[in-house]
Length: 237
Ligand code: C5P
Image (cartoon, rainbow, N blue to C red; front, side, top):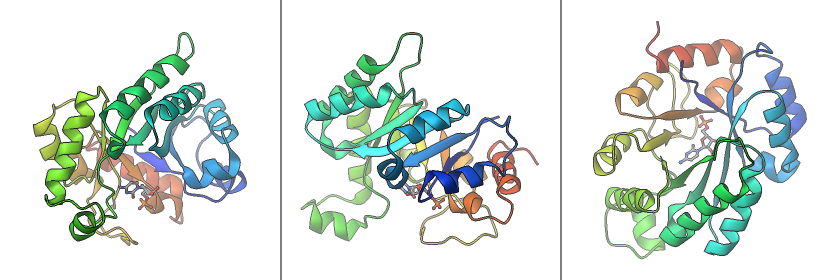
């Protein structure tokens, strides 16, 4: 069964430890480590999660000059992660160099982490994009442009809204990864997310991975919530 990626949006290792204790010890999870926890605990948090048998999406959204991103990616690949990302706005050359860094840093007999790109952040409105980035195109045109550029640079896919994944796959190819946050099971609080879809709707729209945070982390019974979301995502009743 495909696993939803759980966003470990917690302040420190101790709270993650308490959270993971609520899951069966033999349940191998796919978790997302973001900036908050990475900058608090450092690379050790990733090594620890990997030692527990969990797959890791390291969501650090790198964006710098190509050479710096390549070196940073070389180091991140050494952590034996499964998935990581950059900002497409860093450009095609930066994305290709990021990929090279991941290849260089992957240890023998390990799989090269998949690399995806953030197009426009979902917190950016069309008005903000046009004003702040001095762009005249629509938000959708910009997202599709970045997705095509990401594909040309040789990356595996993009982070996007489940509402954009169908159009992105049409413009790239059906195997292009669309990793989508903003997932809410029906009948739950949507929090600060604005455009949300259910796991089942995300699947129908062609999402490859879903990232789910609060509906699991803040649930009274996180494991039960996780299983329900996983079942919905896999079309199991
Ligand atoms: O709690 P919730 O399910 O909204 O968490 C979604 C996760 O995905 C958070 O870690 C959030 O930072 C992240 N994310 C997002 N939208 C993006 C990119 C990342 O919500 N475009």
